Image (tube, rainbow, N blue to C red):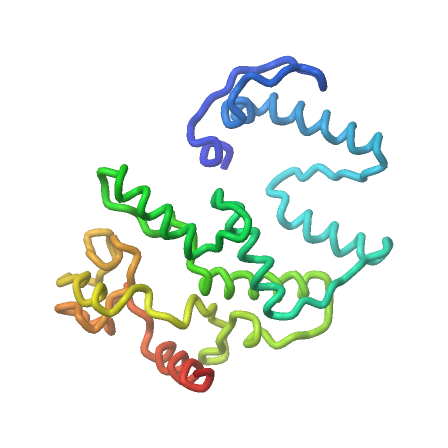
Amino acid sequence: MHLKRTKGISGTKVTFTETTPFRSKKETFLANNENKQNFIEMLSKKMHSNGIETKHASADADVLIAKTAVESSISHPTILLESLVEDVKNAGEKVITFLYGGVPHEGLDILRYKKFANRVLTCKEVIQIHTLPPTTETATYHSLRTYFQVQTWIGGEEIDPCDFGWLIVNGKLMPIKTKRQPAPQRLLSIIRCNCKTNCDTRRCTCRKHGLECNISCGECRGQSCMNSRHGDIDVEADELFSDSS
């Protein structure tokens, strides 16, 4: 896990204090385990001195963070803001835009276009769609599912998952990715595959471009391969989308 996060970078051990000027790249500095641990300990002491409780996770911190938050809500005053769907959507878009290096009020769709256009001008290889920021609609459903999960963790008011980015198919919750086509129809008609196998490798033209196979594909027709939605999910989704339109 450490090698995966550091991307193979091996940093040099650095002896430092709170007043040591930082003249290294963050990634290189944190690639050294001792540097990272010493920095965490120094930061924890500083937070303790300011009355902030800290905990160290022996492994991945996600579970500890969630459990600590739930425990703290019992013994400490907690302010819970009842967010409407629109509030969750707007807050989620702001956070994701920031994570992708956008500016306030820019919006994900504009940022996605700018990132794509820049890579078209500078990249000599096929642009990997999954590396671009998500669309506003995709981010909305992700944010709604996140809100639903947080409410579940903190034991908040029970809410219907189908109102927060989920779809029930054959008794199971399936995430709604988007209600829109992944690309304009004229583009979908151009990008298609003629795979003789199961469209389960990057040799599939549709998969390589981050698209599901569609009716224009020569062999699978977007129905009978590993890169297409299952028919029962399509039917259920079509019913949901037609009701909401």
